[in-house]
Length: 259
Image 1 (cartoon, rainbow, N blue to C red):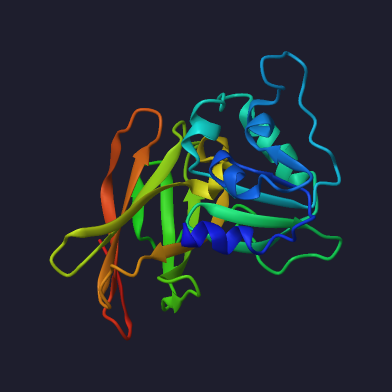
Image 2: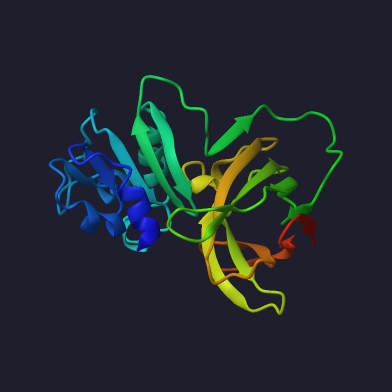
């Protein structure tokens, strides 16, 4: 609840906002409040009328792991276009991001942060490879910054992942991210979609290079020294893809990524 409030407190009281289900109870007093599931689904509730979010909505507060809003209303082959139109058809800048939650604000000025970046295809052979998944996805680099303390408790660890599609992926790949103590006990875990569901892996073209930026929440219950385990899986079938990475944090320094 503290982390949810950390997001809602950044939204002015009179500002219009669209949000996923989990945040709606915190925003009920707002004069203009919209539910993001209409954007995902593309229609009004119990209607075949196409949904159109007002163009002047000032903020968007989205938990991309909101099970009710996405799992109940997401339709493969249709919702991707709705979500892309929402994000790329407006001038959003990032106000705050943590785990799968992002707070955006409409602004005429360009933002300095991005959730992910699509780079031109690379023609040369990669000089550095961490893992190849399913002979289709190549994880070129994984960088982790030192954890930073948060006002509402806990810490965040900023990650940067750089991918290259060797073939066009047919799966909707997600990461299971587990924070463990030195004895291997799980103290926190989350599932996250590649590129926040905005640019899912099954839309990537052969040769595409994608760099993701992600802030992982480390709860107060985690020890000073911890490990982050990353396991790729197919969101539709649940199949775990062979190959797992881990990031070791020793309390004062980053010990690097391990296979």
